[in-house]
Amino acid sequence: MIVFDLECRAGGHRFEGWFGSSDDFARQQERGLVTCPACGSPDVGKAVMAPRLARKGNQMPALASPAPAPAAAVAAPVPAAAAKEQPVAHALPPEAVAALKAMAAVQAEVLKTSTWVGGDFAENARAMHYGEKDVVPIHGQTTLDEARELVEEGIEVAPILFPIVPPSEAN
Image (cartoon, rainbow, N blue to C red; front, side):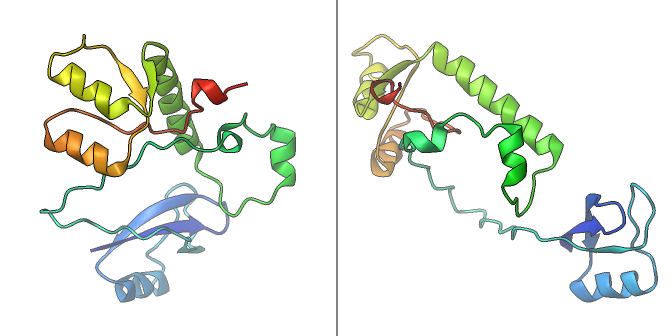
């Protein structure tokens, strides 16, 4: 099976379609069997999509390095009026935007109760894991190799999903 992101040319609706092969999609489209589920238009084509590559079952996902982004990357969002002036190659569906905003809000709330430890993250996480320090929520920076070592030691860590500015660099 293959999944295509499809787009209704008449109404701009986006949806997924599952087909046995690329040829199967073409045959069904020629016969008028591929229609927009929102408006019923048969004027449907493949939309631009990112490839979906699956990992082998025996491969672990790589840990992302929680290195901070430059301050410009975490600046305030562009006002709506200014955003309209900039060309957008492909806008996210409203549901995706809402989900990202919700995740960012949850991260912001969690970070309010967490202590920034900067580059000493691995050292602090180990000390708490081995009972040398009280266990408290922390966040900071570490290298990918240090994060892997923490995981190998059984220390639970997770990357911060959205970039943050270290307190010493905040305005």
